[in-house]
Image 1 (cartoon, chains in turn orange, yellow):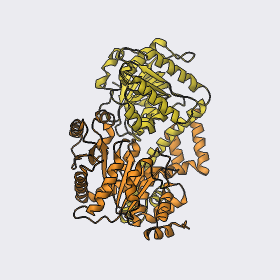
Image 2 (cartoon, each protein chain N blue to C red):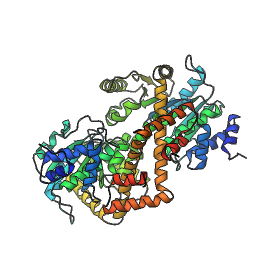
Image 3 (cartoon, chains in turn green, cyan):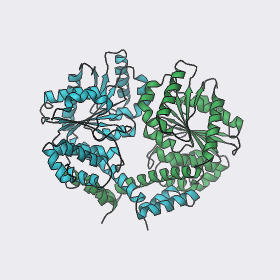
Image 4 (spheres, each protein chain N blue to C red):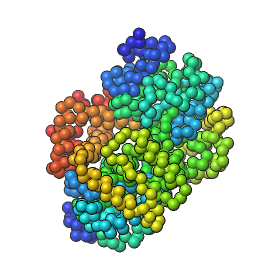
Length: 320
Length: 320
């Protein structure tokens, strides 16, 4: 029997129970009191080192993640930093109906690791959680941290705001592209420059690699000058080429993060999460219970034109 | 001298003053009291008919918009509906530094209309507005409505959440693609099906049109069954081919909207805007004045681990 009490589950998961760990993550994935109880239980201002991988479907994120796990376990740490003893993979797919620990179809490559007790692989989908996936992800990361996973690879399918929210949970965000991605650069340049700490051109044995590199360099040249310029790594994840180079860049970024501005970035990240929780609580507080009636009254007034959205919102937020 | 008082500006704009209209839109584009005063002044539960055009840069949105203006003025109305006497174009580009009524570089095609008093063209960028562009857009639409524009074409560059927020302001959302867009369908399918009322395959004289049509049909087949299935129109905006077909589909969707569920959709749209205003007010209320100190206190507590985001948010939202 798997217990239902978050504290007992956490104790069991620390002893190595995968079933207990899976249930804790399901708690933060779902809405309700158990989410809050678990989130409160595992909260810690420090969390595992999180590497985010994002990019279009088919870019090779799963294969690259697989290679990264192997590399992380072989190296055991970033130079000069704490060792990684356990590595977790969270696959975040907002459009996927699969969850509950089920391995996604394209995760078969990770099966080698599935029986390794130092590795935990889990997909995450939203199921009515307060604030959706963007709040479930940092909580799931902290569950993993509380259980002893010191490195988390966070894999997301790049779809707009979700991508940006998830990136805010990652310490290092890797944007995975393929050669010949020029058009997509056009389409997405508004969002992608901001989130990338490292660019990977995967399938770099194909034509168009140098053009894609040039496009990315040009994009960065046009952007603001920052203290960290995202390096561009070429990989062929299918056979492991370039993965060591990627690891070196990840280590270099980890080192960069530990330097100047570290506390400020931590604070900004926590503030970002606090703001998202605030928004979620606000929505909950105006849409449930007695407040729901007041909300409908204001909507009626808006429909008839007797108020405007700003007056209506003030009336809901600051009732007389 | 252009007045500064919103009521006087509105009166002047109704008399035809473009300078007054431009200033009113600048008010809602910017933060501050004049935004609120203007928004409250022009609020009306009914607004102009809004056609949203979204899609990647280079898809041909500007050329298509240009053709739509010509077509709208020629037809003068959708069959059986109120006539369009004046048409406005709002170009929303979150990544653009240009604003203040400046015509964007690629808007030169619209210059033919720029001297037509029935047409008003304006680009919109965010400049510190409460809630950003997603709140400025519905307010700008209502400014235009209050001044007598009965049709607004809202052109946005498709970038994630912004696109979805802007789509919620449009009565009909047109997603503009090009032939050979298959990969992008993969990448964006999570978001795009939900916002499209009409698909346009522009540059349909190029290879790949039938494949793109097939991809879109397949996407829709896999999605939920809805009472409106987005038609797919092929256009060559550069020479006007297919634009009449597009107009017919826009008219058909306008007719559809006027039917069953009309009031419910209006209510949902107004609720969506109210929620965005609520979120913006909340952020303002926790980040300014005396509340800002309490916010920093909660952040300090989070940094030290003595609270968690849920308790911190509750403390800020519901101070004892």
